[in-house]
Length: 405
Image 1 (tube, rainbow, N blue to C red):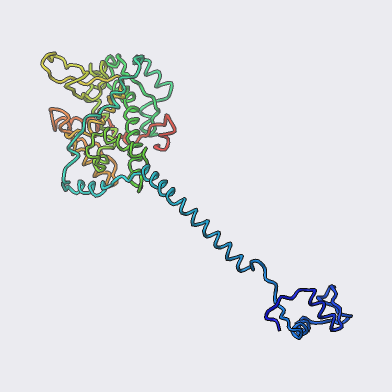
Image 2: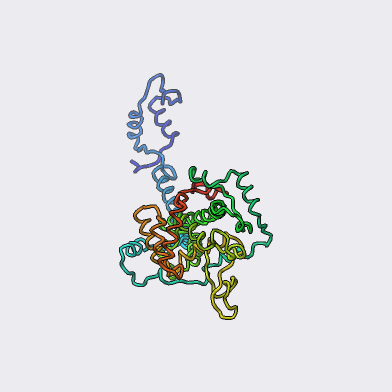
C-alpha cells in the first residue's frame, strides 16, 4: 500500500473499468451503466487497490489566503500611520499656534473689586497713556471740507426728516443724523427752550453712536472671554483694546470695568454745562463739548490767560464726534473717576440700569467746584428730563449695529 499517494481521474477510471463499471459525466455526479454509484463506493474500490483519495491542495487555501491579505493590510496600515502621525502632530501644533488661550482671571478679580477688596496691585489706578487717544487723533486726518450749516438750515433739515425731541421721548428711537460742527447762529437764538432743543438734537445722535461702539466692543469682549481658545485676530483685537483703554499688564478685569457706556443723560448734562448749551467759544471754534484740558498739543487758551505762562488750554477737535469720544475715554480711564467706574460696575453686577443721578456724585473731580459741580449736573438732568433719553436707541446706519436696537 502506498502511503498517501496522489491519484488522478485517469487512474480512478481505470480501477472502475477493471471492476466492470463505466464512469460518465452527467447531471448526477456519476452514472455507471444506468446504476448509481456513491462516493463511498468509489472510495472503497480505490482503497482496495491500495490508494488513498485526498482533496487536491491549492497553492493557497482560503484560510491561508485570508491570513495573507490581513497581514498585507495590517502592514500597509502601520506604514500609513507611521507616515501620518508626525504630520498630524505638526498640524496640531500649527493650530495651537493660531489659537491662544487668554488667561481669564477677570471674574474673580472683578468680584474682589465689587466686594471692596484690594487686589495685589490695583491696576485700575494705573494708566498707560501711550496709545490712549490714538483713535481720537485719527479724526485730525479727515479732509478739511466739513461744511458748517447755519442754525436755520439745521432746523429745516430736522423738520424735513421729522426728527424731533418730543417724538424721540415717545418712540425712544433716534434717526442717525450726525453733524460735525455746531451752527454759529445757535448763540443768537433768543428762546432758551429752542436753543436747548436744537443743541440736544445735534448732540444726542453723537453720544448714542459712541455708546453703540462701546456696547459692540463690550459684547465682543465677553464673547472672547467665554471661549477656551482664541484666534490670532481675537488676541490682536484684545491687545488693541488694552492700549486703547490704557490697561497695564493686560488685566482683563480692568478692561471690563473701563470698557463701558456713559449714561446718555449724564453726557448731555455735562455737555450742556460745559458749553452753555452750545454757545461757548470752545464749542464753536474747537468743537469742545466737555471742556477737557490739555497742557500740550492743540488747544484754545481760556480768555485772559497769559499765552506764555504754560497754563492749561481747552482741547480742540476737528469734529464734534471726536470730542464725545475723548470725553468717554477720559471718564473710562482717568484715575480721578475710578469710583465712578466702580459704581457703574456694581450696577452692572446687580443687573440694574445705569443711573446718571447716582453716578454724577462721583464726578466731583471733574471741575474745581467739586460737589457743587455734581449738584449742578444733577439739576440739569432733572429740570430738562434728560433721563428720558437713557433708553433711546439710535436707528442703525449699518448692518453691524442693527442688532443693538
